[in-house]
Amino acid sequence: MLHIDDDLTIQEWELSEQFTRSQGPGGQNVNKVETAVELRFEAERSPNLSAAVKSRLRRLAGRRWTQDGAILIRAEETRSQARNREIARERLVELIRQALIVPRRRIATRPTLGSQKRRLAGKTQRGTVKSLRGKVRDNEGNE
Image 1 (spheres, rainbow, N blue to C red):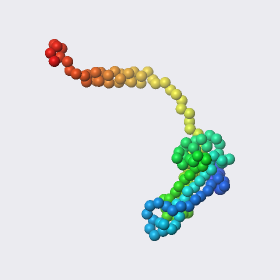
Image 2 (cartoon, one colour):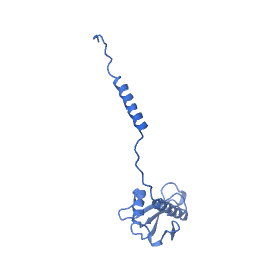
Image 3 (cartoon, one colour):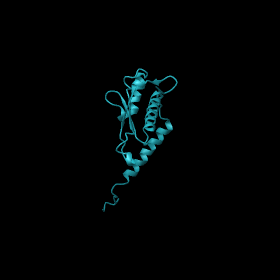
Image 4 (cartoon, rainbow, N blue to C red):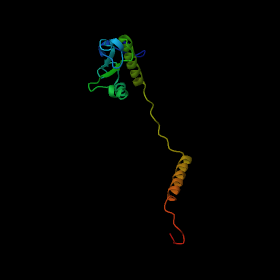
C-alpha cells in the first residue's frame, strides 16, 4: 500500500513495476543488472481518486499519461534497484499530492483608471517615436 495522505492510499493492485537495464555508464554490471524501474499506476481505474483529481493528474502527468489511463514513471538514477523503486514511488506520491490541491479560481478585476491612462500615454509616446523615424523632409521644398 502507498500512503498519499491521511485520507488517501493507493492499493498494490493499482501499481505494477517492471525492471530494465539502465542507460549510461555503469561499470561491469551495466549489461547484466536490471536496476532501472518503470512504475505503472492505473490512474483511470483507481477507485480512490475522484474525477476532478484524475483530470488534474492527467494534465500534470503530461507525456507520462498513457492512452489507456495509466501513469508511467521511470527511475534510473542510482545503481540500486531498491533505491530506484523508492524514487519512482516518491515521484508518484508527489504527483498525486499536487493533483489533490484544488486550484483557486481567479477573480477577474478591472484595470484601474491610472493604469489605463499610463498605457495610453505609453502607446502615444511609442507612436510619436515611430513617426519620427521616417524620411527627413526639407521645409523649403529642396531635397
